[in-house]
Length: 273
Picture 1 (cartoon, one colour):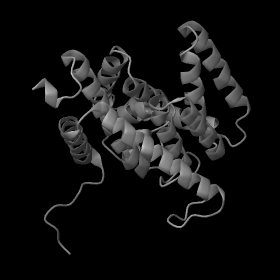
Picture 2 (picture 1 turned 180 degrees about the vertical axis):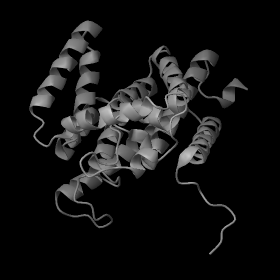
Picture 3 (picture 1 turned 135 degrees about the vertical axis):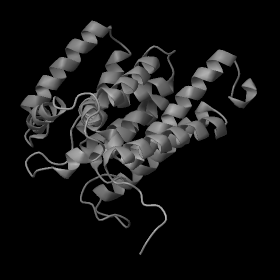
């Protein structure tokens, strides 16, 4: 059959289209959502629902998916772990305990390290926090029986070697995945190296600028969630997954609404007139 419009799957047209869709969704949600808390509550409900479904999968009952992982309604446990990580700063103490326990059940190292790092960062100064997280990373390397961390050591040198040949504008969306090998797999294992491979410095620079804006903004639950997701992006590629991309856009809208509420001193964007 012939269609009027075909979604580009890879290359620079796909990158431009996906970026435009994300920005349009961010703007629409910022305008339509009544408040940041409204968005955050729905992210929490999504996390709790997926945690509950993950427990059903742990018990051997999975009526919707055929995956053999504890992943909720996501395709991998890594995605579920990052959703739990995003929801963690948004909830109260007892719900945090439940989310942390679910991260243990799912065996998501990304979520566990992120949750531990967030908890420690609320109680210790940055130099001590950095030393503790470095020590934890060393322990994980020694205990990495499945080679998940060492796989990154194989992939990143190859990725950097290719980036060096096109550092300014990269190779386009999907080019790394198209040349995946069995030993390395299809993932770049770092959102920032993936950004360099996809769009070079032209793509990475605005990503880092947005990260800096979030880092220097006033403290809020949405800010903490986005910073945790950004840190997870150092060793994962969350924005290669559509569901996590939607979660990121939602949290970005919540953060933007929080900043506007702080500036206006009003409870919602619509009140700013």
